Length: 117
Image (cartoon, rainbow, N blue to C red; front, side, top):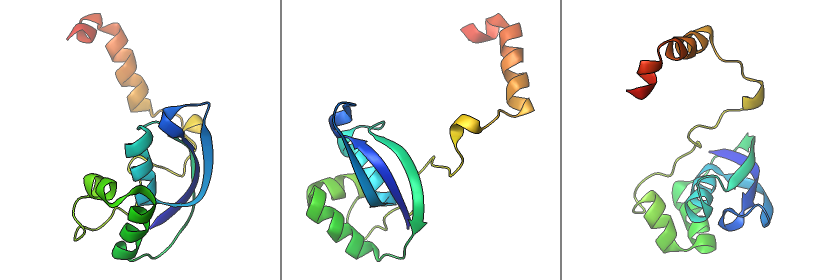
């Protein structure tokens, strides 16, 4: 299971941020469900740990409430996610679009009717 450090914007507010360390992948997902999809910022993977799903589920239920854990992840017999969807260790600000992406964008600009479809 991936482990992260991050900041959580409580209720999505940039005026109320809490720094968290040793946050598991399921906890990141749960925090997003509670505070909003863009409330977890500066997400950095810091490691990985082996964790029993039942133990992690109990830990999350103790902190965030069993009802919320079941609402987000389903009943207790279902395994928790071990990764955060869409997360990459790559810094997105330094990623360069591929030639195919650039060509597709240029083709769209050259065909304004395609934008209206």
